[in-house]
Image (cartoon, rainbow, N blue to C red):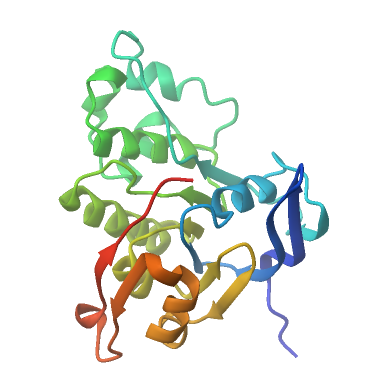
Amino acid sequence: METTEYLVKVEDLSVTLGDNVIFKNVSFELEKERVLAIIGPNGAGKSVLLKTLLGIIKPTSGTITWAPNIRIGYLPQRFHVDFYLPMTVSEFLDLKPTREMTNEEALKLVKVDASWLTRKLAHLSSGQLQRVLLAWSLLDNPQILLFDEPTENVDVVGQESIYTLLHHLQDSTGVSLIIISHDLHAVYRYANHVLCLNQTTTCYGEPEAELTVEKLSTLYKDQTFFHHNHEGIEHLEHEHIHQGKE
């Protein structure tokens, strides 16, 4: 009998910080070469969940079981570069303590020319910087990549480009992804499973089954209004969304 190989399995995970319950009783699992999207409103606990998976925040209860010797990549929601920072892309990538590929190989994976190595970080656009950060995370050839809001502060054209790139990386390297996203079009198009989080799990499963008007209304309450049609992603629209940042 064939057994499923999970890269990570989370069971009844809860985090309380001080007197605040951030989230409780969250369970999910991720197999090899799969994509899990985490969605939810501002303050739902999404970013804290990623930091708990990474061991940055200690869970109050529950278990996180990683596959043995797993290599994990992580891109935070915010990475600010001082305009006066003289560091080049090459110098930044050279700071990576462990690696299984060269800077040039990592840049090639994110579809960036090696000539970028001499460019200053501070002179990059937000979309360009996101690609460099992604190249950084790929240097040690991770099996799973945790990505907190991949299109944060990226324009509309750049947002589609980033998601297309992540899909390309999954196809070319086999990396699994856990992505926090507010872009339901991208979730529906690229994710194998979606976890709806608002301090607890409100839905979990395949996007086409879970991204219904009823479940999304429960998740976002009065923050969002949706139209959803299973005929295709083109018919999944969020007419109005009032989202803050975690």
